[in-house]
Amino acid sequence: MEQIEQIALFLWERFLLFWPSIAILLAIGGALRAYFKFLNKRYGEHLKDMEWVKENGGKITLLYVLPTLWFVSPVIEELMFRMPLIFFFGSITPLAWIGIGVSSVVFALMHWFSGFSKAYHRGLHSGLHSKKDAGVIAVGVETPDPKQEKSILYSRVWQVFATSILGILAGYYGVYYQSIWVSIGIHLAWNVAAITVFPIFVGLVVVAILCVLAVWEKFMSFVRRRRCRTQMRFFVLQRRSG
Image 1 (cartoon, rainbow, N blue to C red):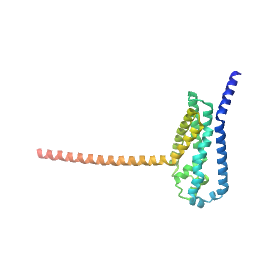
Image 2 (cartoon, rainbow, N blue to C red):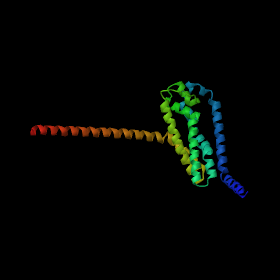
Image 3 (cartoon, one colour):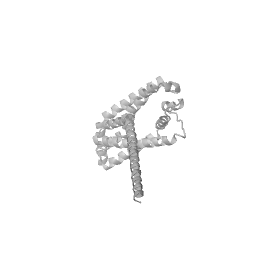
Image 4 (cartoon, rainbow, N blue to C red):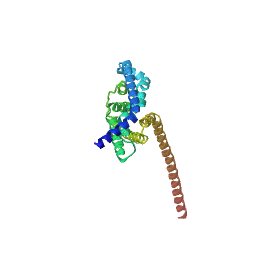
């Protein structure tokens, strides 16, 4: 009986500590739901017109994609996956690490099985070259292309790996600082970096690798020429001495 009372007291204290943040996040979630409901009323019919989708890609990105990446994902996903960790674990303990690991795995698997994720990666690799491809991102219609299946698979596997890392970071620092807002900040920074810093970084890495390969090829070509000249001189000296 005493243990039950202690558990109840612990849960009550944690609730009093976190209910303002939870209430604010639920209010933000409600506002976002109302926002997307308004958008669907305003543009829902247009999204079925692939010509309109192709001509208004910028508007779709601004009104749908960016709010989803920068507001919906950080708020809703952190409330679902990190808030329970922060609520039940007051510090980083071995048990908390288990919770963080399980949460990050479930978080990553959610991105694997998500219909939006599948549609997004198909659209990403299609390059939006056709009406049907544009519809992939706009309305989530899957358009399998056997030639692209392998690259889509690799992209989705990478996303699962990346989101598991994100889950560990957001879970660890959220529990460590006892703040869901820290987790949301990490998630938001990750999503912003994913479409700005990461592509630039990958591009710089590719350029650096190409430069290194070019320099290496020049160096090996120089070495081969030097070796060839050395062998020729040795051959000439042998003939002269003979």
